[in-house]
Image (tube, rainbow, N blue to C red):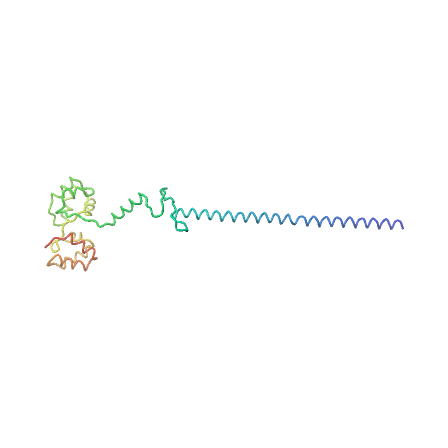
Length: 233
């Protein structure tokens, strides 16, 4: 009887110990869960901070872009820098840009050539690459009746490439009824084919008749410019 009571006490004691251990394990698991949540929360906070930083970086880039475009969303002028590192405000141009614009305007302007038979020595000497010595040679062989004559005389002093360059600035007067093909090709817009057609239409009663025939073959601007090249018949 005493032995059975002792065994019962031992069994109860073991059951109580097992129950205590189970309770401790449950409490331990419940305490660990918030730690995971806390870590997750920290991770979420870090992601949110990264997003905020990205948004701030985007705003900074937009502000930098305003300096480049020269205007903000309110339409106000913003000072920025050009490629040369110069401070400029929208609507303003630098000295370099102004000079480039002027050079472009000069290049776009129509070139007025000099009549080789009537231009002054000073006018000829002022042409690019000419000078007084060569200008004297220009004048010495006047009057020119064809561009071939001018080329032949100048070839004594300079090469063919330089003669071609001089022809950008001078011309031999064109006779509607007498000038050869090369001389006719000095006229704006006239190539070899058009020159041949003009020669086939001879004789012309007047310069006006010649211009009428030319107008059917070139643009109105070229036909108008050609009048300065012609000599009266």
